[in-house]
Image (cartoon, rainbow, N blue to C red; front, top):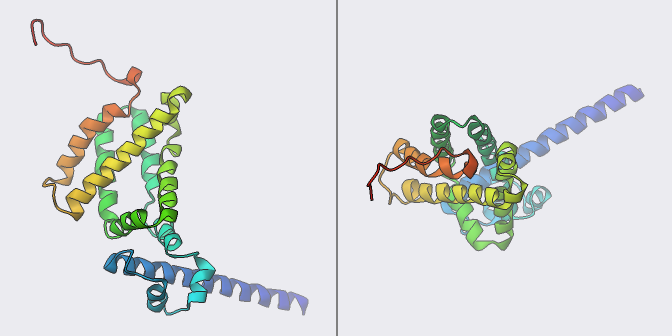
Length: 222
């Protein structure tokens, strides 16, 4: 009798867990659809729960508010998290291959393309929500932390500079993508942009002692 009761309780617990996870996923998907369609500022928690078909109380069982649900969208629903993209870059830089770096740059641009719909809401939340600015800063801080080989090559005495270089790379990629794909104010192809960005960033991410020597100018050249 006790074994059957325990088994039934376990099954009920598993079912409740599945239902809870399904509700969470429905809320995330509904919030993402609302943010994509209307922007971050225009969407309320009431809009999200109405789209999900649940109550405000249910929403607050899973999330603390709009900044939290947007954060979880980035952490749980993107096909590949940004931190994985930069963990991949660590191995690319370890190889020392400019060709591989150019391929990574193209994949980084493709990541922005894949997540293009939700990025304007992210930018809007950073501008509007002090709480979300802290979330965004933590997300950026995760990126150099996912690159131990890169940080090791720069050395502990240049750790801050090494992190800053990754942060500036992220900033330029975000700004380029906004102007190129969202605003349409840069006219280029993804491949051409990736090649030019590679020219800029491949040497910039190598410590000075790892960079190839500059080509010498011919005698008499000014």
